[in-house]
Amino acid sequence: MKKLILALCGFLASSNAFSDLSTGIESVTIDPTFSQITIKGNGLSSTGNTIVTLGGIRLATVSQTATTLVVECPGSPAFCSPGDWSLQVSTYTNDTLPVPVGQQTWDFTIGAVGPTGAMGPAGPTGPAGAAGAKGSTGATGPQGPAGAAGAQGPAGSTGSQGIKGDTGPQGIAGPTGSQGPIGLTGPQGVAGPAKTLAQSFSKDYDMNRPSGSCNTWVDVLPSASNNICSIAGLKGHFLGWGEYAMVGIEGGTWVFRGGSCQNDVWARVTCFTLQ
Image (cartoon, rainbow, N blue to C red):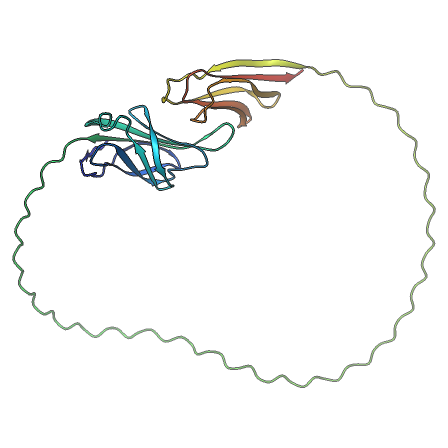
């Protein structure tokens, strides 16, 4: 893991420890007052929220584009003090249940800048090189391309039209046959056995997280060949900071996926099978 020193005048730090999906950090700089951090890269915004944390603490967004993100250090300059830090950028969709789009973690060190060294003296001008020998005659070039095709000659005169043949007589149309009788209705089939729905799976997911600390959950549910699964209940602080819960079919099996950055977040999944 590489680390560079963040100078008071905003030198560049480069060390991406983790990269996922479309979010990509290329540089991180801090202003001389340690009050604002500027992040440059690609995929830094999405249709929903973009969350930036420093040392696990969420930072307020000052401005945001797809390539530049400026955030504010809380309690500046006391919070962004010299030391080793871990910065994380997470983007989400604007769905009713936001889904993560991209995430990247950037580790760096904030420290002091040493004095600028003195410029060294200019070196002497080197002597002119000797003239090179005359090169040999080059090889004969390849044959040039063929010339363009000549213009098309004039069209010949049109020949005389042949004699039109006689039209043959039309054949006699045959008579239309009568419609056959409607067949008899067959007997009703025997009723099949009755089917019932029975609960095959039920589970509560406690997705509580300390404020500003995010996590995701993935759980494999029953097979999709003979089960139907759904979200049966939701409660808690679904504030759009990465809180979501959903079920879907992946590779022939029902799968639960959830995420939370808040406390008191809960979801229930129930599955039924036809018997």
